[in-house]
Amino acid sequence: METKKIIRVLIAKIGLDGHDVGAKVLIYWLRDQGMEVIYTGLRQSVEQVVEVALQEAVDVIGVSILSGSHVEIARKLMTKIRERKLDDVLVLFGGTIPKDDIALLKNEGVQGVFPSHSKLEDISTFIKNNVKLAGA
Image 1 (spheres, rainbow, N blue to C red):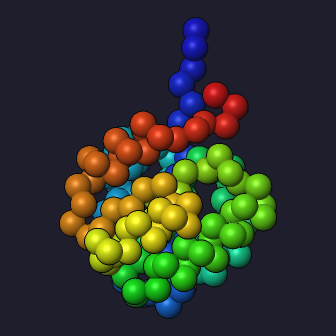
Image 2: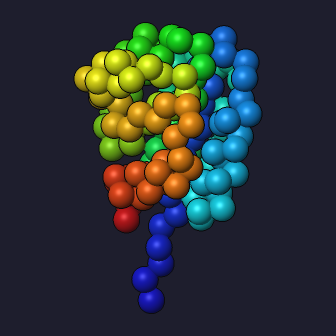
């Protein structure tokens, strides 16, 4: 009998952004889709998020950001992810992200970008289609 590995997702709020309603909606949605979701809480540093990702052996890091500092945070996060050899982790950014910045984020290594008002179904489908499961 083959057992299906559950996708482990870390949802992070990096920086001074104090609004997490959208992140919480996404967390409940992903859990309803059968994923295990860990939430960092508000005002985390890049280092804290990467440390949690390592400790929890997550398949996905999703960053929810509304502060406008998404490009700078993406640069720092992707650098730290490469340093810690988390290359198989799928990285997503969502929130207040102008369309002109999507290419910038992807150039930094972010695989999925979901601006405000993206459909929850699109996010969960993207994760399922693109995640690399460790040990699967």
